[in-house]
Image 1 (cartoon, rainbow, N blue to C red):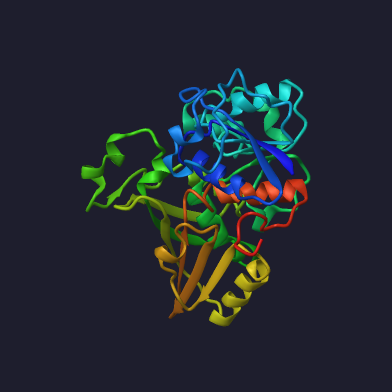
Image 2 (cartoon, rainbow, N blue to C red):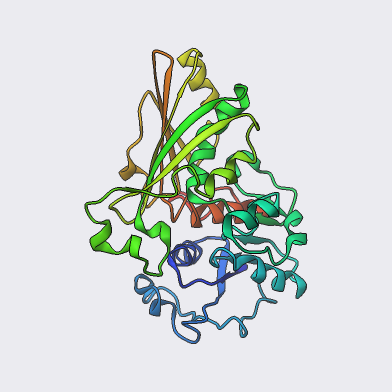
Length: 331
């Protein structure tokens, strides 16, 4: 059993990390930090965990990270890098997975422009690799930048096209639940505002778009409109483009890339439904082709495949454990 620490574990993603690690056959959860809940049991922040674990939250200054074999950082964006810098400067040598956006960009200038802050440790960016396991693993490093939720769905949907086509143009519209905005209340996630309502936001300017285009052909053009939807968790999106390719070839492309991947489920000639993906570690991808029009649908749980379960996938790979350990019923 390897000892795993979770930093900043009081939020929605922290809850999912804790839940997955409690049931993991190879991992022992030994430390969870929270400044607000220091000294209190895990169920003080996460009532679902009552009677499931005796661990208490540690304050950031009191955390025993030297005993950890790996660390998962679930801090807010613009705070993850500082936590990682302190961890690495303190001599920690095990795997580190940062779930914030702070290490997702190869170019820290792009990060600073998008998030409006100076990167506190640009020199450590080179130690991190972007962590979509189905595309970039196996990894040659010990530090992983866990991708964003929209970015995961879009990149998994577009990657087979990227590997077989030249530059292309696509339109993406994706709807997300309120939990994607985090546990801290905000006007846009207030229930009376969100219930029964659909609202586009950051149209053509969402930070998850440059997160994925840095890995695509520089001449590829993607117009992305994210939409606030009236549910709690899950992302459902559509990619639309014109394509002059045999529909059978498109199916083969997706099977070549994801046929052996346990956490991408393919739905040929079908656009997947959100309900099948929520509360699971899967990204469901389906497609329909008619008269040279291609529509790709994707669905995933933003807190799991879009965050926590993908982080556990990455942890499994870095630790040399089975790919699906702790994530499937049979694992």
